[in-house]
Length: 126
Image 1 (cartoon, rainbow, N blue to C red):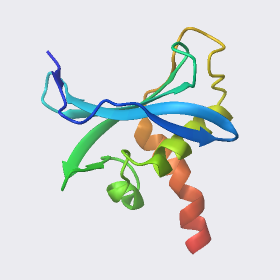
Image 2: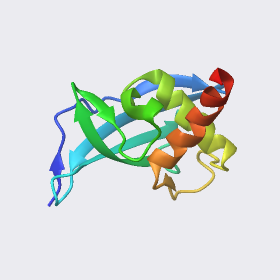
Image 3: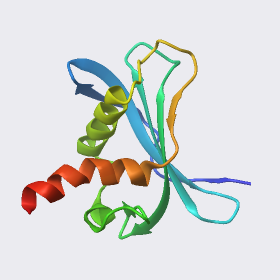
């Protein structure tokens, strides 16, 4: 049995690469009471073929933390437009074509995506 989160479920609008999307980040407890977070996004006007990025989560001070992600990702706040845009851009580069299929584009290892997104930042600081 999954337990739903108490966080808001309202869709938020964002523009990425000149295209309009709506998105939300939600979390829930799975059957083992571990937190599971999911970022979902859709092209505006489309209700199918959305993006789903899944994370195993821990929470500290209300900020999602992703176990297994690089240490820089420990304070990544997946509720913010900055990270929604980054994840949408990543999915577009990985082949997501919003609305081209009724099946969602699913990324099961969100921690690996964060590692890939944070890697260039780590190299720039070196």
